Length: 234
Image (cartoon, rainbow, N blue to C red; front, side, top):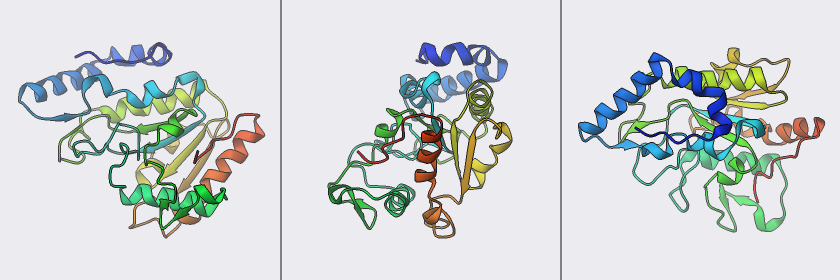
């Protein structure tokens, strides 16, 4: 299996990728493919989130648990979907909160979670601004959510979070929901900003997420350290 990873990340993760548990991940995926199981994403896209956003440039981290598991839905950035795919409810609530939190010109405002100019729900516009959209598990079997949640991916992605915390400063970590918040011990809060709230799922968004103001708080923090703010909607 040929995994494509940029040099920026290789120099921080290559020792981790030599460990036995990572080789077990690769062996598992190869066995599943030989059994004609459909695995998302294709091997060249497994590290999409990392390859979009170089280690040295990461300013914000948004963590999610599991990749989308339907054909054509995802492109392996957390919460993001392909252009013109029906928007998932959690992502719709993310955009509702952007509207609640930040005022935009009229042609970029939201209504009932839908941008009036029909902007796509593809979050590469964030990744291009150094927002790391990281799934805790990097693969999934078609139509089977969380099917790869127990094959050591979390050990690997936990190391990514820990390495970012140790080797960088002034990164904003957005922890939405109990699962993401369980990663808080990996982050040095003396060096970074950690913002926590409920998950944007329809089951929990109205408890706190829709009034969390995480998007403006992120930009305020970046501005404080002379870092370019994120254009959450372009």
